[in-house]
Image (spheres, rainbow, N blue to C red):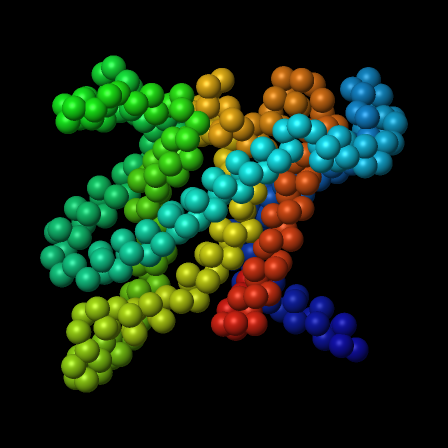
Length: 307
């Protein structure tokens, strides 16, 4: 009886809001075709995939490829670089859009506010190739503006792009510059939803602007901050391939080699499809476990979570 009632309720909802469901259908099809159906191929991580035999015909080898990856010389370096870059990016890149949104929200001049938003949003629309090209030009040891400034101050030119110790900082701070404005949009949207009467009451009580930011604005956007933090922690192992690959060279490989670039070398260049699938699956499973753990902690502490 309950099941019949639930089915009838679903049919009623579909009948009333069919336009909205029709609107979201292409998105559902996209995720089904490009995200869920390809998961069928994950089984090659447990097989020695042979192209002529196909997925079903390839021999089953169990956890052979996982054991090989865990025992390889590169395992700890890949793990350290991937987690190190992600945590550094999270520590620097996550709070800066929040601070930017809080500052922009306090600007009273609409013209100046639009100027700041335009300037900070614009880098988001640069392609990764263009961004890395700009970084290489600016940090060039001979013609780069940064090294020219260092030499003008009496220092020696620094080979930023070839010294491993500089890689993480360049990667993270260039990413922060590119994405901080775009990432602040959601916080600005959350700030507009705060009841203005709370600010009026705080002014009556004699609260300064900083006090109102701390006691009104930040608590008002706390749920948004928590949700985005959960999503960011859930992708700690997902350091993007394209930007790392473009910045990577044989001299900084010690610091720039991450799981995604290793999968590319092993799977595409080395034609070790099963091994690369195993490494990628390990990466995804770790991300999923972190997502579940952080989501539960957030739910227990703040009653705010993804589910």
